Image 1: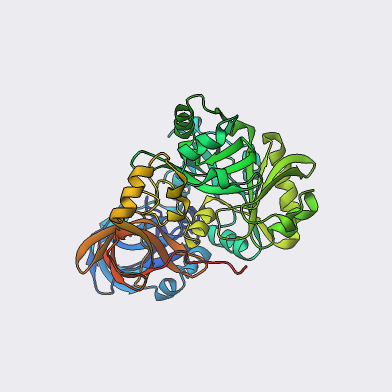
Image 2: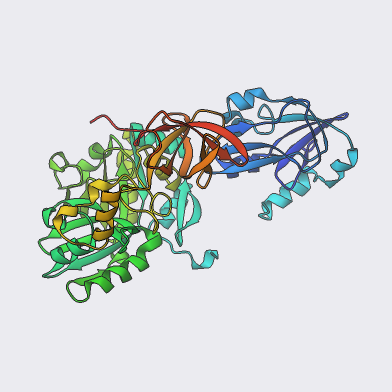
Length: 128
Length: 366
């Protein structure tokens, strides 16, 4: 369910690190809690953010979830396919339904994230 | 509200069986969705959906004087309601504002059933009892009924083989007392979805077997269990008001576009003087529909702006599964333009363009 090569935030985002670039999306748990995603708003490419800044919105019919960046950095790319077809976030939240790619400025932000095992436990304990 | 105090309907186990996601709602633990809001919504528009609305309250009003009392209590014309029919009405304050909206069923000459919102059940009962002042017998019978809503174009085809009530002669807002699946029931051609459909008032212990039977009988027709999520998107598309959103103690039926339930010529009733005056003076604001033309979903509480200044507030807003865009309702000044007027909605700090539209958004083919 939760790939071991990803890191996870308490806000139910996953992070895949490749050198100094993070790919960020929402976890399977998050998409299931939200229900059918009908709207995705993502930041502009080139914008820089601090860690935990709100960078987007994901909405289902009933609920609104804010997307926070787990790391400080600059937006390199956004997943326009998910903006055009929000259902992608439900169908493949941890793959093709990724949301943004960020070039991070300080690797220390990653230290606050959980590994897959810790995240699974976090979800099971009903945190959220 | 702590989970421990939440009430459960007789269909609680059925919801769990069907994979329902249960949430607190008006003091009850109710299913918000099963397969998903959009799928359930579409099932109701194209085939059938089955809802548990047992949380709604029922108040019995009977005895000589019941007609006179209800005509004094509610704005619609009770004396004109024939036995076997129901009408939409309200409980209003002296100011003509809503205590609740409700359905009035005329079971017999002086025998009525009021169906009220779960969130207001106790307050409504006290209100009705207090105003009756012995003129009619008033009883809270909410625990004596479970209520299932079978809604959608296939509803009649699914139910007919299970009931002795001839559904072909049952008109919209008509009802009959008969049997459904061998148990006594009130079968009512009413609903809150904008589709053809039936609402079934049954004994609480008959509810679970009936729920399972309807899902089984409806399987070939494409029936799906449907939750509060779909109920909300369906009623919004159909332009139906929801208490606590479009209606509350600050809004009148005239402002809410419900002038048709207000029969000012029938004589005095609670709130009639205020409503007569408001009708004469003109309403200060009106309920309108809107569609979001920009990117985003306007939600309840968001501010509506026009030409740079605040003109109103969104009462309900959602993404519409039928139209595949964001729709909603809002109160705006009565002097504002009609459908087509461009406005802006403040969606969590972002200005999103929208356009006023007529209500309802959705009207079924009859």
